Length: 169
Image (cartoon, rainbow, N blue to C red; front, side):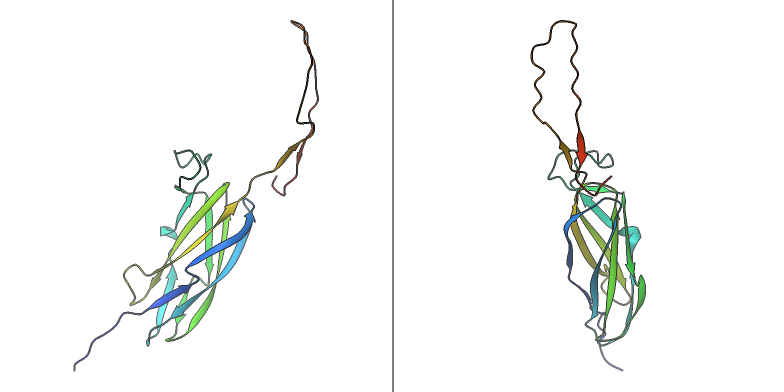
């Protein structure tokens, strides 16, 4: 018997899935991706959520220990699921996967989700998802306040009206 084996070649499309628009914290969002088996043999796949990594540029995220926009730091306040989570992938076939996310922070994010492929490359394949989470938008009525002259030990009072103009509580 003579021959050579090849590892299974499974690709994810798109390799980078961007959630468009501004997302709201704690809300769940779903995007569909596809796994393609480019091999001549059947294989299985399983998403590895334990090794999923989320990076954010949220300057207020207490979990990062680093502040300042533009820094991408690891965070742990996110939830990601894929459906189906695992399954069989026939030779030359593809499967649609619904990737759902819910994030508990505000800012830009990138999440890498690895997928184990039986008889595939040691690292499997990875899908990267990214987007932006928006916080509350506050409007202050009468932004310019002039108290005029105030004498020593006098007090003036001015009532401010804040309005939340976003869908975030």
